[in-house]
Length: 105
Image (cartoon, rainbow, N blue to C red):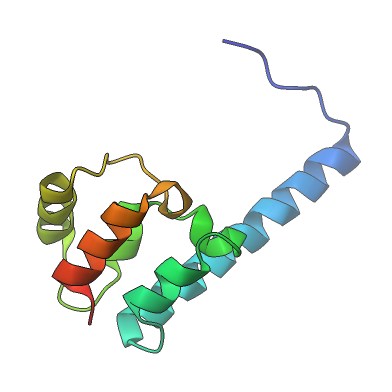
């Protein structure tokens, strides 16, 4: 395994700040999904253009939907054939269509 690059304190602080912003944005998206102000269809359509949505793990997005817990999210992913580590941007057109068919609210 390669060693990570050595960063000076300013670079490290900038990377930590960038990571914190990304985590906050993903948390906000998951909260909006849970409240219903963003639908699954909206989130999937933004995946290719928006890094916040694209880099979110599929299982996290599904668990954020109202009425979908850990068990149901994994069951749906298994039925469709989506790996646990897949990110939203990496979904194929058929996988997106299947998710919308089963969970599109």
